[in-house]
Image (cartoon, rainbow over all chains, first blue to last red; front, side, top):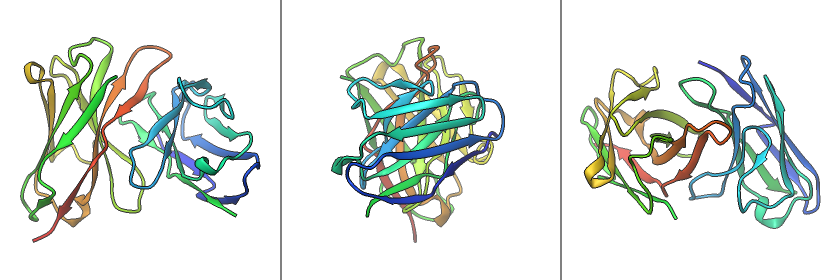
Length: 107
Length: 122
Protein backbone atom coordinates (compact mmCIF):
# COMPACT_ATOMS: atom_id res chain seq x y z
CA UNK A 1 0.00 0.00 0.00
CA UNK A 2 1.04 3.61 -0.57
CA UNK A 3 1.42 5.39 2.76
CA UNK A 4 0.35 9.03 2.95
CA UNK A 5 2.05 10.98 5.75
CA UNK A 6 0.23 14.21 6.48
CA UNK A 7 1.56 17.04 8.64
CA UNK A 8 0.90 18.69 10.93
CA UNK A 9 -1.80 16.61 12.62
CA UNK A 10 -3.26 19.80 14.05
CA UNK A 11 -2.61 23.51 13.95
CA UNK A 12 -3.98 26.65 15.54
CA UNK A 13 -4.38 29.74 13.39
CA UNK A 14 -6.20 33.03 13.25
CA UNK A 15 -8.57 34.46 10.68
CA UNK A 16 -6.49 35.94 7.89
CA UNK A 17 -3.51 33.65 8.42
CA UNK A 18 -1.83 31.76 5.61
CA UNK A 19 -1.97 28.02 6.33
CA UNK A 20 0.02 25.21 4.72
CA UNK A 21 -0.60 21.47 5.08
CA UNK A 22 1.71 18.84 3.62
CA UNK A 23 1.28 15.26 2.45
CA UNK A 24 4.15 12.97 1.60
CA UNK A 25 3.61 9.75 -0.37
CA UNK A 26 5.72 6.64 0.23
CA UNK A 27 6.22 6.31 -3.53
CA UNK A 28 5.74 8.35 -6.68
CA UNK A 29 2.04 9.03 -7.29
CA UNK A 30 2.50 11.57 -10.12
CA UNK A 31 -0.26 14.15 -9.50
CA UNK A 32 -2.92 11.63 -8.48
CA UNK A 33 -3.84 13.42 -5.27
CA UNK A 34 -6.88 15.17 -3.89
CA UNK A 35 -7.50 17.35 -0.86
CA UNK A 36 -10.70 17.17 1.18
CA UNK A 37 -12.30 19.33 3.86
CA UNK A 38 -14.48 17.76 6.53
CA UNK A 39 -16.58 19.69 9.03
CA UNK A 40 -17.93 18.01 12.18
CA UNK A 41 -20.78 15.61 11.46
CA UNK A 42 -20.48 16.08 7.71
CA UNK A 43 -19.07 14.10 4.81
CA UNK A 44 -15.74 15.18 3.32
CA UNK A 45 -15.88 17.56 0.37
CA UNK A 46 -13.23 17.69 -2.33
CA UNK A 47 -11.33 20.96 -2.63
CA UNK A 48 -8.54 20.02 -5.01
CA UNK A 49 -8.05 17.22 -7.55
CA UNK A 50 -5.06 16.24 -9.65
CA UNK A 51 -2.85 17.90 -7.02
CA UNK A 52 -3.52 21.48 -8.15
CA UNK A 53 -6.92 21.76 -9.86
CA UNK A 54 -9.58 23.64 -7.93
CA UNK A 55 -12.93 21.86 -7.59
CA UNK A 56 -15.82 23.86 -9.03
CA UNK A 57 -17.37 26.16 -6.44
CA UNK A 58 -14.38 26.11 -4.08
CA UNK A 59 -13.01 29.55 -3.12
CA UNK A 60 -9.78 30.59 -4.81
CA UNK A 61 -8.03 31.04 -1.44
CA UNK A 62 -7.51 27.26 -1.56
CA UNK A 63 -4.66 26.01 -3.73
CA UNK A 64 -2.70 22.81 -4.16
CA UNK A 65 0.75 22.09 -5.46
CA UNK A 66 3.26 19.30 -5.82
CA UNK A 67 3.84 16.10 -7.73
CA UNK A 68 5.62 12.83 -7.21
CA UNK A 69 5.85 12.40 -3.45
CA UNK A 70 5.45 15.89 -1.95
CA UNK A 71 2.18 17.81 -1.95
CA UNK A 72 0.90 20.96 -0.30
CA UNK A 73 -2.50 22.47 0.40
CA UNK A 74 -2.43 26.21 1.04
CA UNK A 75 -5.18 28.44 2.38
CA UNK A 76 -4.05 31.95 1.54
CA UNK A 77 -6.21 33.82 4.05
CA UNK A 78 -8.02 31.66 6.59
CA UNK A 79 -11.73 32.39 6.96
CA UNK A 80 -14.03 31.43 9.87
CA UNK A 81 -15.72 28.75 7.76
CA UNK A 82 -12.34 27.09 7.05
CA UNK A 83 -11.89 25.73 10.55
CA UNK A 84 -12.25 22.01 9.85
CA UNK A 85 -10.31 18.80 9.27
CA UNK A 86 -8.37 18.34 6.03
CA UNK A 87 -7.32 15.08 4.39
CA UNK A 88 -5.25 14.16 1.38
CA UNK A 89 -6.15 11.11 -0.73
CA UNK A 90 -3.98 9.32 -3.27
CA UNK A 91 -5.80 7.72 -6.20
CA UNK A 92 -2.76 6.50 -8.10
CA UNK A 93 -2.88 2.90 -6.97
CA UNK A 94 -5.23 0.57 -5.15
CA UNK A 95 -6.01 0.58 -2.34
CA UNK A 96 -6.76 4.28 -2.24
CA UNK A 97 -5.20 5.72 0.91
CA UNK A 98 -5.79 8.85 2.95
CA UNK A 99 -3.44 10.96 4.98
CA UNK A 100 -4.02 10.95 8.72
CA UNK A 101 -5.73 14.35 8.66
CA UNK A 102 -5.03 17.87 9.89
CA UNK A 103 -7.35 19.65 12.32
CA UNK A 104 -7.30 23.40 11.75
CA UNK A 105 -8.41 25.11 14.97
CA UNK A 106 -9.08 28.67 15.99
CA UNK A 107 -6.17 30.26 17.85
CA UNK B 1 -27.15 17.25 -9.06
CA UNK B 2 -25.86 13.79 -8.19
CA UNK B 3 -26.89 12.54 -4.77
CA UNK B 4 -25.94 9.42 -2.85
CA UNK B 5 -27.81 8.12 0.17
CA UNK B 6 -26.71 5.35 2.51
CA UNK B 7 -29.22 3.18 4.34
CA UNK B 8 -29.15 0.20 6.65
CA UNK B 9 -29.21 -0.86 10.29
CA UNK B 10 -27.48 1.42 12.76
CA UNK B 11 -26.74 -1.40 15.20
CA UNK B 12 -25.15 -4.76 14.43
CA UNK B 13 -24.21 -7.49 16.89
CA UNK B 14 -20.64 -8.77 17.12
CA UNK B 15 -19.85 -11.66 14.74
CA UNK B 16 -22.83 -10.77 12.52
CA UNK B 17 -22.88 -9.17 9.07
CA UNK B 18 -23.08 -5.44 8.45
CA UNK B 19 -25.20 -4.67 5.38
CA UNK B 20 -25.61 -1.25 3.81
CA UNK B 21 -27.02 0.07 0.58
CA UNK B 22 -26.33 3.26 -1.34
CA UNK B 23 -28.90 4.76 -3.68
CA UNK B 24 -27.73 6.97 -6.52
CA UNK B 25 -30.02 9.72 -7.81
CA UNK B 26 -29.60 12.59 -10.24
CA UNK B 27 -27.18 10.65 -12.43
CA UNK B 28 -26.40 7.33 -14.03
CA UNK B 29 -24.80 4.42 -12.22
CA UNK B 30 -23.99 2.83 -15.60
CA UNK B 31 -21.42 5.41 -16.68
CA UNK B 32 -18.09 4.15 -17.95
CA UNK B 33 -16.31 6.99 -16.13
CA UNK B 34 -17.05 6.00 -12.55
CA UNK B 35 -16.61 3.39 -9.92
CA UNK B 36 -18.79 3.41 -6.80
CA UNK B 37 -16.97 3.28 -3.49
CA UNK B 38 -17.37 2.67 0.22
CA UNK B 39 -15.30 4.52 2.82
CA UNK B 40 -15.51 4.41 6.60
CA UNK B 41 -14.45 6.60 9.52
CA UNK B 42 -14.34 5.34 13.13
CA UNK B 43 -15.51 7.95 15.66
CA UNK B 44 -12.84 10.63 16.10
CA UNK B 45 -10.47 8.97 13.64
CA UNK B 46 -9.40 9.16 10.01
CA UNK B 47 -10.80 7.83 6.75
CA UNK B 48 -10.35 4.33 5.33
CA UNK B 49 -11.21 3.30 1.76
CA UNK B 50 -13.02 -0.06 1.86
CA UNK B 51 -13.44 -0.85 -1.81
CA UNK B 52 -15.38 -0.09 -4.97
CA UNK B 53 -17.40 -1.55 -7.80
CA UNK B 54 -17.93 -0.81 -11.49
CA UNK B 55 -21.39 -1.01 -13.04
CA UNK B 56 -20.27 -4.25 -14.73
CA UNK B 57 -19.55 -5.78 -11.33
CA UNK B 58 -15.75 -5.48 -11.33
CA UNK B 59 -14.48 -4.79 -7.82
CA UNK B 60 -11.40 -3.67 -5.92
CA UNK B 61 -11.10 -4.24 -2.19
CA UNK B 62 -8.77 -2.96 0.48
CA UNK B 63 -6.51 -5.92 1.38
CA UNK B 64 -6.97 -5.08 5.06
CA UNK B 65 -10.67 -5.99 4.77
CA UNK B 66 -10.77 -8.17 1.67
CA UNK B 67 -11.49 -11.44 3.47
CA UNK B 68 -14.65 -9.99 5.05
CA UNK B 69 -16.02 -7.59 2.41
CA UNK B 70 -18.38 -8.00 -0.50
CA UNK B 71 -19.54 -5.09 -2.67
CA UNK B 72 -22.28 -5.64 -5.23
CA UNK B 73 -24.40 -3.52 -7.57
CA UNK B 74 -27.95 -3.50 -8.91
CA UNK B 75 -27.99 -1.11 -11.84
CA UNK B 76 -31.74 -1.46 -12.38
CA UNK B 77 -32.36 -0.05 -8.92
CA UNK B 78 -29.41 2.38 -9.11
CA UNK B 79 -28.02 0.93 -5.93
CA UNK B 80 -24.80 -0.60 -4.74
CA UNK B 81 -24.23 -2.55 -1.56
CA UNK B 82 -21.71 -3.29 1.16
CA UNK B 83 -21.53 -6.45 3.22
CA UNK B 84 -18.95 -6.82 5.98
CA UNK B 85 -19.06 -10.07 7.87
CA UNK B 86 -17.77 -11.20 11.26
CA UNK B 87 -17.90 -7.66 12.63
CA UNK B 88 -16.32 -6.56 15.89
CA UNK B 89 -16.36 -3.31 17.86
CA UNK B 90 -13.45 -2.14 15.68
CA UNK B 91 -15.88 -1.96 12.76
CA UNK B 92 -17.95 0.73 14.50
CA UNK B 93 -17.75 3.72 12.18
CA UNK B 94 -19.55 6.16 9.97
CA UNK B 95 -19.84 4.48 6.59
CA UNK B 96 -19.89 6.65 3.48
CA UNK B 97 -20.67 5.78 -0.11
CA UNK B 98 -19.09 7.87 -2.83
CA UNK B 99 -18.58 8.20 -6.56
CA UNK B 100 -15.02 7.56 -7.72
CA UNK B 101 -14.17 9.19 -11.03
CA UNK B 102 -11.62 7.31 -13.11
CA UNK B 103 -11.38 9.85 -15.91
CA UNK B 104 -7.91 11.25 -16.46
CA UNK B 105 -7.27 14.59 -14.72
CA UNK B 106 -10.44 14.48 -12.59
CA UNK B 107 -9.95 11.14 -10.90
CA UNK B 108 -10.85 10.62 -7.27
CA UNK B 109 -13.81 10.63 -4.90
CA UNK B 110 -15.93 13.53 -6.07
CA UNK B 111 -19.42 13.00 -4.64
CA UNK B 112 -20.16 11.58 -1.19
CA UNK B 113 -23.25 10.47 0.67
CA UNK B 114 -23.97 12.02 4.06
CA UNK B 115 -22.78 8.91 5.89
CA UNK B 116 -24.45 6.51 8.27
CA UNK B 117 -23.22 5.50 11.72
CA UNK B 118 -23.04 1.76 12.32
CA UNK B 119 -22.38 0.63 15.87
CA UNK B 120 -21.26 -2.92 16.63
CA UNK B 121 -22.52 -3.89 20.06
CA UNK B 122 -24.47 -6.66 21.75
